[in-house]
Length: 90
Image 1 (cartoon, rainbow, N blue to C red):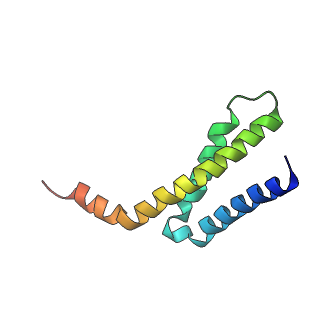
Image 2 (image 1 turned 45 degrees about the horizontal axis):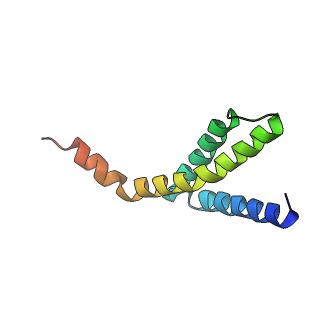
Image 3 (image 1 turned 30 degrees about the vertical axis):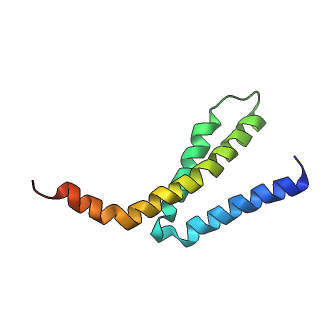
């Protein structure tokens, strides 16, 4: 992997991590949970050695973080309304 490509990937990961930490109370916790879930799910995936599995797990964290941010942000915006609708008497 080239140096510039690695720098770009690490910068994207650091930026998403910073967004998750800064916006923790606005759905950023979902980004951290998504990254952890993606990392763990991809860690036991196919791979010849541990280095390949760690690479797959890193890519899983990169894919899980934006999805977690989206879900966490949607829960922050619409969670109270959803709970009110679901708990309303029929």
